[in-house]
Length: 492
Image (cartoon, rainbow, N blue to C red; front, side):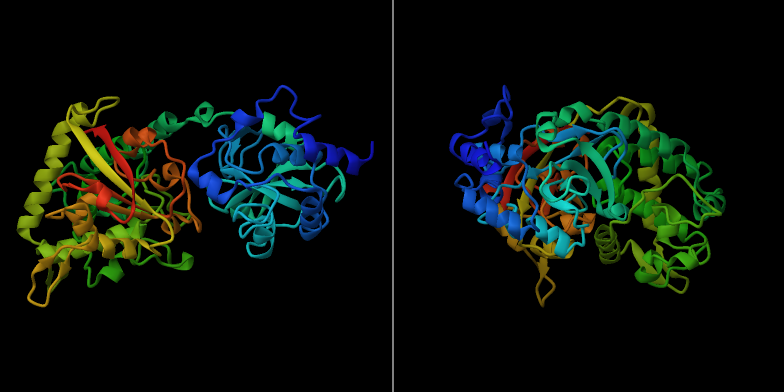
């Protein structure tokens, strides 16, 4: 039987000759997002297959690919992870996909759709080695491809991982498409959240401090002789809240911002916020002139490496913290630059003492508090371009008379008052993702996410999120013009 006849047979009868004994129907998760973005309404015709193959560069799609798409033309699998023998940018031992592209043009994620194979080659400059058939939760920073380099455009391609973040490094994944599909496993097999949390705890407990922090500890020794231990204890609390050492707009992060600013100003003048948070170019990265990034984020010259660091800077959250502290009068402008008032310093030391007093109970290993917290989460896609846009939607406005006016978000969800530091805003672009991502990716940096994020079942991608924590009270969450993801609990 000729190749054309074989394909005609597959188009008529589905996955005949391929995926024998494989539950094709149970392989797919037909969520609303999948049906809208991936799943073509009809199986591919012979004419459509031929046209797309020519359009994609003359690469002949594997018979197994055609067979699977004939049975179900594109979608998001229920099992998304594939083991690999060597590390990639995604993980040490596996890669993960979001969806498999259908043969068609009517869906944005199809092979011939808006974000199809040619999009990544033409606009993202992925190497033209074949057909990019599956995307990942990184939203474009790594992809899965059918690799025709060894077999030629009409042969049987292998499956490879291509890493945009690592100069488009190519890692072998599977010997063919069918082996890839049948070898996919559930993501629970690679759940490393506990190992990651323990690694983060080890880092904040034992990681070396930056030269700026070491100098600051000496400067405040008369007031706070155990300043270094207080910083580690607070960092442990952040890790227990989130599962990682990351600072955003939650209460623990706000306390950390306060503490770092007080330490910084013990021997530095802060003339402006921009001076304080400026990230210097590589050739200037030394402890002189010092700034926030060199103190805690991890930007340090090779001659002065340090381990106690966040690894990233949530600039929008820092902006919000600074604005709130200026507005409340905690930070005042003096002849020596911006500094905390005496009352603000006293309040800071009291809060640090509270955290230190929690010690082995609330912050200790494998122990949680008994109070139940609640977070209400809202998602959107294509509405906001940045965290600042989200904050404009959430935060109160001020009239010409200086009176507070409810924001659009407050009015929609029935919030009479707003505590802005307990509302976290996230945008995929701020995390380096240029297209929408699954909620578990977008929300993983939120406060207490290690506790409540496993409760989230939705896989429908979004590019913006709002997390509302107490003391804020939402009385009508379904009144929001955003998508209400739900109400989730955690222990504090």
